[in-house]
Length: 429
Image 1 (cartoon, rainbow, N blue to C red):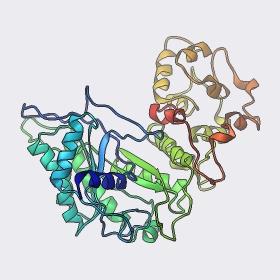
Image 2: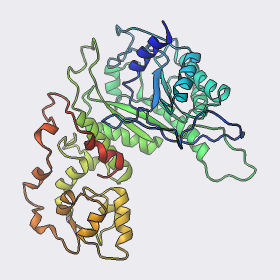
Image 3: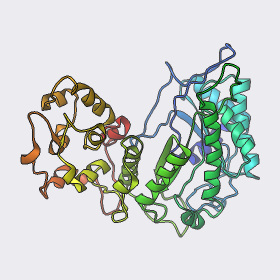
Image 4: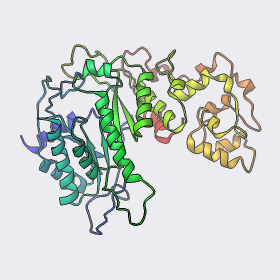
């Protein structure tokens, strides 16, 4: 099989992994010699799909052959698909050729498990080693690691990669036992803990002048969770993500809506969940990381699934109307962050501006805020929302999208416009 055909098979097989966004980490050359590629500066371009995924990397598998038989995976052992396998030299050549043509900014490399976890990790590491040491490649490298591999190999992978990741896939061991019996959540978290320790060693601040610097290591780790492949609620998914952020300090948790695969297992759902559910989880994830929300506030035991019709911050505000309206001239920063339509950057601007003047609606307009969304929830010098009907039963209906923009009956995935995802990219929720 020629390289072109292998690339068609193995690039297509890698498309289901969402955790491939570039961190933009700089890899400096301490020797002073010139290398190939960069993770920043001119010549690096990012392309995004309508749902916000970064596609500026050469995203490929070493092989789609696998010892595991995960029901949701098209590359599972029992799947009837065409198999292919790259050699490390072929992946290295493809990466350099694509980079020199300015098609990509780096490499995202994963693999099915062949022979054993350690053998597979050795092949993946060999690609990164050749790029870094033999070809002086300074571009971005993201390596997908295997929790069953030895810690020494995972540590070695971190030396060559800008980011490494281990996919959790499902948020509970019960779901894994059903759909991916070879995988173990505790073992995955243990591997994440070792990676976190290595990252902490690299970023330790207090070093004496004579203290030797630790070996280079990846700047962060990420993971992916499938949405809709099992019966896990949004509360369970977000609870798992919050634990990973808190305990293992992951950079990102990526959510990937389950997509039906050819010749699926009988225990998988027949239909994909609506794509808007994946989007709402990303928005909720943003609230956890940057807006000081707790999982219980976003998805409670009484309402374990997110409102698909409204973004999670707006949904929270409508459930907690007694906390509004908020005076933007007096409210503390943490309460400003909870106002629908106010993002982190504009909260900082408001806090800074109100030190010198009393803010009016015109001032908020200059910040290019969505006043239609803000006005029911805020007080300014020249505005009080008493007449906006904060307690009205019709307030929620004001924010509902047109019927054609969302499917609430799970009949088919909706097709949101690219503008619907701008709030996740900009952080303005």
